[in-house]
Image: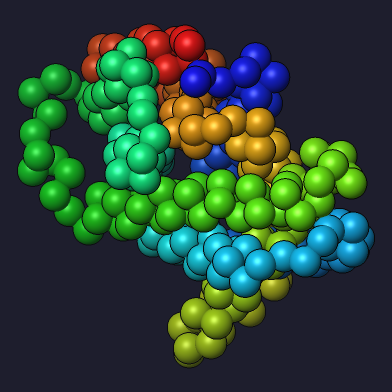
Length: 300
């Protein structure tokens, strides 16, 4: 089973928003406290919608709430890992690794859970992964495992594992929520209400992690830049809200995760066009492989 045209379109729009958000925030070095402000702002904004949607639902099992808390925890792992990686390296290295590895990891997890993927989807996901690892290279001879054996890559891997965790948890939680609602609310309302709950859970996990001395200092600094944090949160919410809606329309979450990688060639293209960044052969080949892989993944 592939992915519907509607779901694919939602994910592609989300990829454009994600690339645009990263383009705007490229000059800043976000901290876990910054993401705490961003996620809590979205969670609190969507809280009334969440209460209304939950009031329309039948009794939700304990598994839903456990998956919701797990999703928030893994989202915290993702954002914390990404922030710490960006503090040590540029976006050209961290972003492709954090975005590429979940493609195969989620596919492997879905297979272990009993779902099957056609060989064309596996080929496409492999191309996406190889392409994303090529994007940050200047010369082909740089492609060696030692080039990625460093602290910034380790934190990028942590971010990738967080992506896998919250993607799988979200899919399971959305199934429970959809069954409990039984069509009582529009799909978009369901998706964004869950988004608010997930961001609120993530923000509280991040807030708990910021209770230490250094975390409190970062939190105070982020509160001084409150407007940017709120705007960032709104952009993140719009981006992932579309992904959640697409997940509710797709049986296999690995297709959604793979299509989201379109933000990488979009980000590279916008950087070359708007920021006048240099374009290298490995980078352009990597973008081409990502696009080819995306086409393969989207085929039924």
